[in-house]
Image 1: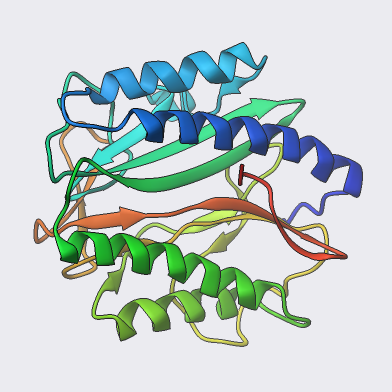
Image 2 (image 1 turned 180 degrees about the horizontal axis):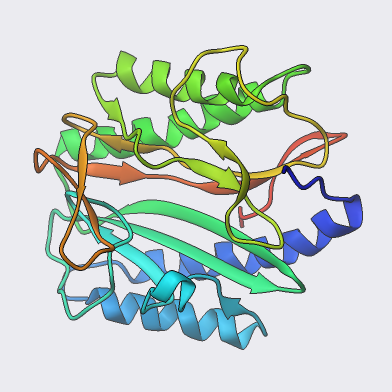
Length: 249
């Protein structure tokens, strides 16, 4: 069941979204050669808790950290550790914060020093595909399939592929709510989008093929062919004034 939010509830989600976005931005500023993914996670947890919130991911399904941090061919759900970031890496940081009964959820891909032109183009296309998707979400009569179709079309026009095994989702009282929001699909299909819906749109894009595998840790998802992957995500609300990005700071 899709949970429709009142304007008052969306205001509460803006608070969770702001804290989420701030934590993500602070971690992004730390990304450089020599930093460990655990140090990034510690920074995220400290900021979220300092704001009176709690990390949405910590303990979620048994996840052992406050953020998912995935490097290079790791797509999502990477577990922070003593891994040291190196020049040329790309690192995906996925953050959630819970406060006032609501979650925020956001992710971005950061560069570690100078990266290849192809890696940078992958990051740029992934980010732009998100904005192509939410542009469709803001149109009258739009459906879930319009978002996925816009994302997939733009990604594939640029020679990359979208991950299909994992998708975006509703966000609210629960971190993952209905509806699923795929990064692929057919325009004009799926649930109709309406005012009060709050969803996470999150393209996951690979340089190579779309297939992925789960590592032995039962969390980290990697590309099957070892190619680089990028991730970009915001929680958005559909309001009477159009699309509101709740996690942007």
